[in-house]
Length: 228
Image (cartoon, rainbow, N blue to C red):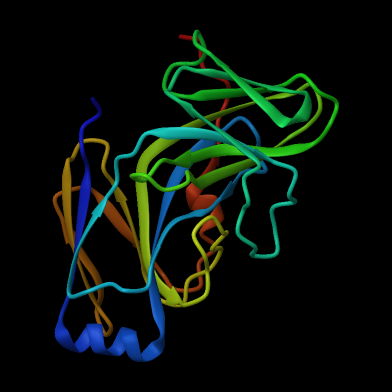
């Protein structure tokens, strides 16, 4: 079983009041590598009802998804088909947007191969409890092509304008964001202050200024790795 990872976010009463007055939502995104340079990160959690103390789980089983929706314009991704996967799996796209899963793929990644001559968007989603899998990484998959996606243990949390749904792209934030590397940690603790921004301990990380383009930080192009 994968190690359970958590980030604890605390807010002072004053900061909590400020953020609620601004109408801000707490957003979580996950970084990934892909062999496709057109990867798009998606909000995996949108938390409008945050409190002064928030424990956010960062460990979930994975699903692969496919959609014929064009990713862009800020709309949430509506997945047509999903299938549970584990790292090292190969997912084959067949006629009718059907997905077939087999092993013997790339270590630490999920490969998605298109046997049709159609363009789709595919990617990885988090299976959160009993809910529908929530996409966090999307890439275009052209006819007869393959994309390999590697989820990273790097996460970004940010408070920003309400209205961005889970499964939607969030390219810019209206406040300072925190990117934290959980690859060697089970728990990270972070505090947000509306005047001072983020502070944190328990895992390596960095703050990201408001207005920064978040896409290059979260979606990283990577060369093909060796098969498992």
